[in-house]
Image 1 (cartoon, rainbow, N blue to C red):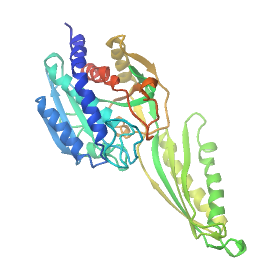
Image 2: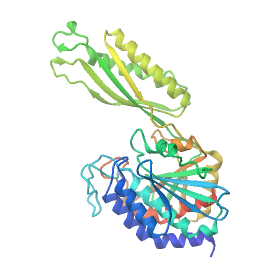
Image 3: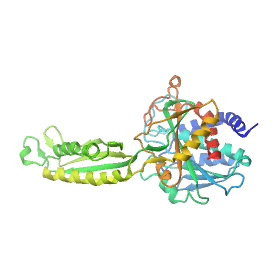
Image 4: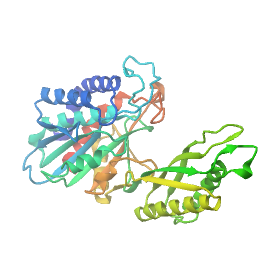
Amino acid sequence: MDLLTSIKAFAKDLHPRLVEWRRHLHAHPELSFEEFNTSEFICAILDEYGITYTPRVAKTGIIVLIKGKNPDSKCIALRGDMDALPIEEKNQLDYASTKPGVMHACGHDFHTTNILGAAIILEKFKHAFEGTVKVIFQPSEEKIPSGAPAMIAAGVLENPKVDAIIGYHVSPELSTGSFGFRAGQLMASADEIYLTVNGKGGHAAFPDQLIDPVLTTAQLLLNLQQVVSRRKSPFEPAVLSFGKLEAKGATNIIPNEVQVAGTLRAMNEDFRFKAHEWIKQICEETAAANGASCEVNIVVGYPFVKNDEDLTQRMINEAETFGSEIAIHEIPARMGAEDFAYYSQEVPACFIRVGTGNSEKGTTHGLHTNQFNVDDDALLHSSALMAWMAINA
């Protein structure tokens, strides 16, 4: 029996346990940098399978080294994230979240289980492949400052030095058994924009005696759209959106200030940081023209995700040779963000999408929604494919 056939047969036998572990994690979600029980759960399973590891990296992270033949010849990393979101689950499941207001609404329970399965497969067949595979269980993907830069600062890409890294994310848009690839730019950078527009409040019946921060904010939000509509190349995607506005006045009360929060997404780092300056300039000038002022706070978040062209093509080739059990798709770039980007800025990277959508099972709800869930059948091939790609990267 050849190696790939052996891996797939072992993964099939492992699948019921993967489902059990994924559902346990789904029922016991933990927020960013609070994944203590999740980390202990992973370590207990690694102990069960005799896999050595380094715990408590960047607080709750775990690093596993699987050494094959000639372990110094190369080091390929696999990364999965562990944290959940502050969302109240609405699914009626026997493994629904047991924690009020916390839910695995982004599939990180799947990611953790998937990479755990890959580690077990790689340990089983370590006599049959060259090099070392570094398996990274990462905390806090969802919250800025996030876990990837913390793990990098802790040395996860060194000792041994990582030559390439593979990551993945579930996708309800892709059907179970499908895998999505794209070389080059894949996901956008993400910065948080916070504005405080200061004026002079008072009775709404006497606007001539006031400096209206609400009207100023309305003008400011319209003016800011020129950052993406007039100041960027039409060939470079970017988004500037504001989703929160608080003006604590009333029908007859103009408040003293207005709070605004939004996000800047970009695929070009040069434009991204120029846009920061333009946002500040437009806010200050628009506010001044109305006699108001504007405080601008830009929290620099994730860079954009870039997939190495050569590595990604090789991984597509390996996925195509995996077998007819899976389907391979080219996926479009998207303006969502992912802190895997930090790794992709340091070493050659390939970030893929794992299809978990199944309309009959109700697993087509969007990410970050209170009815999100995954099709556990997706675990049947995904752990095996991740292990196979790590072996052949």
